[in-house]
Image: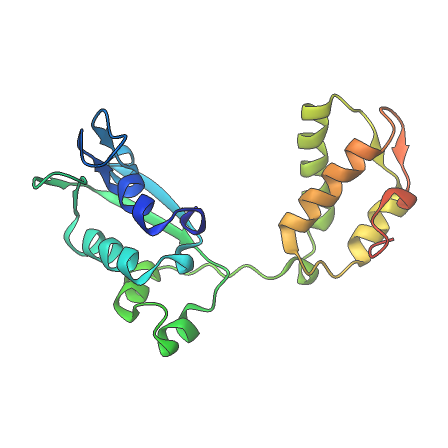
Length: 190
């Protein structure tokens, strides 16, 4: 999750570090690029990277080499990068917030996902999230038909994450067995 990493941590997380490279680096550590060598690496929220981190990512994508923090030795990596963002990267390029040359490297094959309100898989996702929440809580309650109908009608401004949290809330707040009625839904949905 690129949005969760500070500028200083991004380099250590992605490229690794040598022992003694910074305070607390008591052993050498491979970064995510090395760990993903010959495989995929998913960079979520790539649009949130700072200009400095974008430059470092661009170099790796261009040259296929990384350098651990505190080392001068380049290491070859063969990684298929999959990235995601909710930011309009073309607009960010025009404002200077995102590097144009990096956009060309991460935008090789684009898969645009429609907002949840424009999709027809709300019930399928709700069922999946319900099973997940049930496995964590031990609950066996299921949403009632009226509850499911309300979920389908709702416009979901928070997209899939909002649906996931609403379902988790239903499972936690509902009875341990039986059905969960629409009265358990947040007021904005019911």
